[in-house]
Image (cartoon, rainbow, N blue to C red; front, side):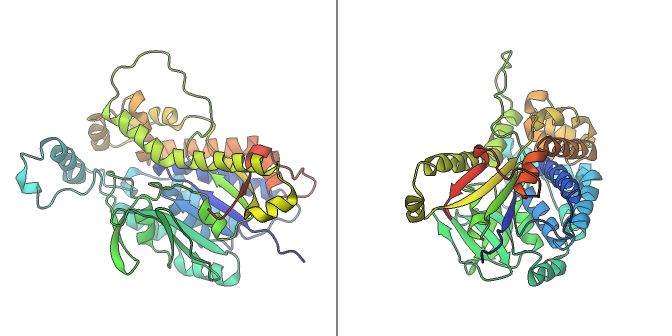
Length: 407
């Protein structure tokens, strides 16, 4: 008798862009609820996330025994979100962090008084701690793992101290530790500190100390140095994998119609953010497709000797550039933040990519939730096929299949 397939969920990073993932999950709930006998628990055995995706993953996993409640809570948080719930936006808070940070960056050689105690980041994300306490229920997570409603939760962070990309995971049963070039896995009980570390966007939010490898190390955003974002779900036993991104991956190239001059600091920073949050996932998805195409040329015997196994994958990513949506909502940011961001060009349309990661305002997040729903409903047949609901074609497009090892 064959064991039931384990379904994994991977939620990518992207700051405020992660609201899109909530819309996708809400649409999946609606589609599965229409099935003949919908399950009360979430339809995923393994939940993994990076950066803001790690926060969504943990909040989702904490209520793994009740799919409807887990979605309702996420929609409620993201649909009512305000910047002040994530980072300080009052004038004093901005002056103490952002203004000092920019001043030190520009005139640090003159400001000797800050040499001993320099500002740690552009923004102070202390309010995020309170938000996480409201979103999460760790005792319930442990109960879900014990009851079998969930097999594992994994979140990633990058160690500034050791230079390693680290996946912290909490599982129902012991899972083999995996180590690869510049990346490692660490079994630990997931905490708020892990989520603060995973979502600490470089330079924007401060690094977080975590106890790892017998010592204290400082960690930042999990999307940094993430060479194989999907590998954690596969190592933890996923046979099928749903991937929800937070940026347009594999879409049409931007049509440049006019010369816009030298790039602003915000435009360069937004480009760097896209490299951190989108490129690794895009390459990993592309890699699975290439491996699948190669393996399809081999005989079953050759496949069995390759050390690879089939992992069905469905990737859902935004159909529209999120920076364009962000450019229409920048005015909803508090004046102090708009003033700070305008100093580096982030309030201009060409610098909106940076703002799209920091725009934790409900007008923007609701637009992303709506887009996530729309994109998912547009791919209804693929979603139903992925979950192998009766009466639907179980074959996904070849580009969404990946034959992968435990890399």
